[in-house]
Image 1 (cartoon, rainbow, N blue to C red):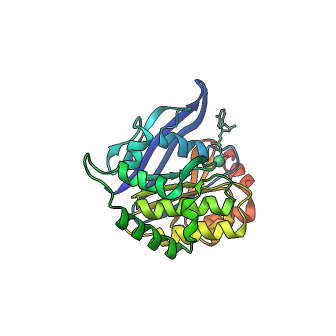
Image 2 (image 1 turned 120 degrees about the vertical axis):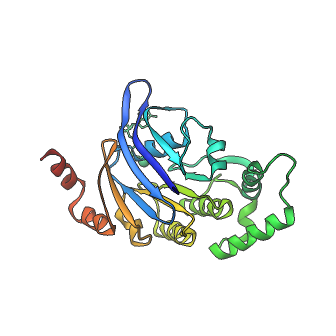
Image 3 (image 1 turned 60 degrees about the vertical axis):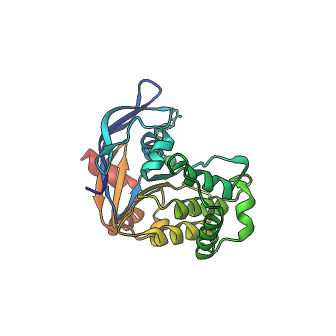
Length: 251
Ligand code: ADP
Ligand code: MG
């Protein structure tokens, strides 16, 4: 099945601090899902645990990408499988231009002896940039170095557009994204929607979901998905707040 399937995922930070406590989520290709949840509920931990980040130890459960287990794989291997992850706090790469960075990522997916054709690469890159309304000179800048929030988002969406991943997980910042940056993310995600792609948007605020209308909304609480619904759930959350979910859990 064409699904990114997360079953009963448990993950710790350090040796004993369990953050993910049996999380289940299916992201089918062709759908956009959103995870919402209060600060500290484990949203970023989920993205990092899936990505194979060193700080997190998965102690139970599985993550299957189209029936292939990706737990324990190296981050570059996971990327080659077709999973794209955008983190809440993206890394800066001084001295590495965006154009070279994306080219290296594409090159890494090719077999031995195969090479990216430079003129085709730039043609494709500029086409994607035109579609996304990105200025040409942007590609010569170092990845994320001194970028504004909006520029980081542009860089992220451009990578996604070039790599054409089968699944995307975007961990959006909880604060500091201005309306311009929100629109960039939304425009990019909406342009990337398609039957051959599953997209998971992690966000603290309902506002982003006014621009990206998700097929499913999941609420995360204390390391688990405690509620799922359609886009109306996001609106309900915005009105009633997370205490409402908590009250129901305790009841
Ligand atoms: P969210 O993204 O939903 O705000 P996080 O996944 O960032 O939540 O954090 C979940 C919990 O894990 C929080 O209690 C946070 O303090 C803790 N945590 C996150 N990263 C670390 C870390 N590197 N070391 C120790 N605790 C951490
Ligand atoms: Mg977070």
